[in-house]
Image (cartoon, rainbow, N blue to C red; front, side):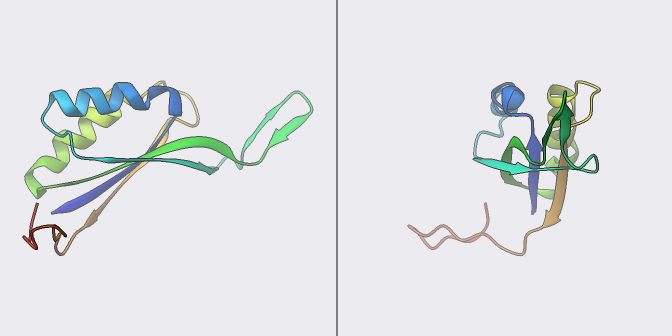
Length: 105
């Protein structure tokens, strides 16, 4: 299992999550976050915004689904501009459902 964390532009998040659901990946978590990338914020006129509003989606998938999920996210979130986001993929040792105690997805 892998956990995929994608930090995205808030205005594109719904399109990304809808596309993931259409592909069978409907279980996820969305969190409103603030941060900055390599550009260290953005300057508009004389005002500098140190941290920008983003949305992080988190989902856990089987190893064989990682490539498909990453491809879907990249396809829907891409604008070609700075700030399109970042995707992190890390291993998950186990997942346990609290209600049933069942292990795995």
